[in-house]
Image (cartoon, rainbow, N blue to C red; front, side, top):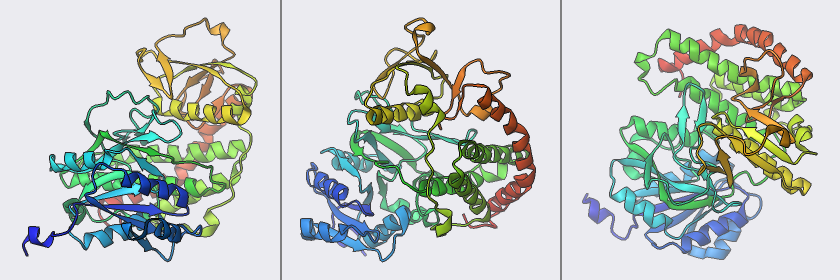
Length: 469
């Protein structure tokens, strides 16, 4: 069949929006699509069995401008997107655009993504610059990277002011599915989004597979969206289960960027320890803070990752989330001037600052926060706060001084010489905290002995293709 002939009357792009119970947000999303500088796309909304009348509202508001696809059950983010992708792949669109329901697009976003994909055929996936909806000129995420040695994801530029100085196209490890465009031929080669995740890490895995197929993955600073994301705190352990299960499974599958055949037994053992340390740090911190339901959910997530359990979690594994008063919040509550030494942990400081902002709104007060990092220059900002190379004042003039670390249980300290804090707001500030820190190590050794053989065996089976990935 003649390809050009088969594409008659077909637009070049199909937009697939996945929605679940966010009818007001998804309507704003569609309105932002109507304001685009190009109309070379069709819009499909996949409704994941919403109970808020989303599907009916979209049909009433937009009529036949939008194709609404209703799922009988909530299939999660990846399952919802795939419902739409399967539908649009039956037509001859050149590109598929994925959008979360809670994004709004800048007017030139679609045209920019389209033109830059068309002129760069070696790019398989391209993501927009993602800005915070609540801080419209602040970057949420741009050109993220995967650090396999620390099992972390670096959002790169997250929390910085959008000053228009980012490179136009920046290569990266993956782009988030809240706003990405992918070539049709890439989907034909690597398949649909991995539905076994249900939600979270599906876009990360997709990006890795795109790289493995020989394509570039890039972020585009000239195409921007505003993303609400995390608008409310889930009262359950839903997010913790899927984030942790899929994270552990991802890092059991992908030890590094190396070819699997080149990975040695020593690398597997070292990677096993990284996984076990990450698991136990989370469990131990929950136990210490009295978040027992969260502790049990994180353990369920780890065991399910080991067993290859996928899809939607069994209901009993998603529990009511306890929210005890944090030690960090107690420390800052009556203070005002706070000095924080970043020590190079940029992702952690972003989490800490955002929590301070939330507390400012809740408590009706304003903190004076100063950030210091010896590697910084005076032009760098995080959430609008300048980062300096040394303190502006004498340390005695601050009410509180924090030192940021990767995780408090990975420190090597013999006493409480500073107040230490990590990205999860675990702190070591007094003797009780220090004693908990000391107990961590013998308990971790016991945990490691119980599980290291199982994790190693799981990794080896995945590498041999004996387990589904």
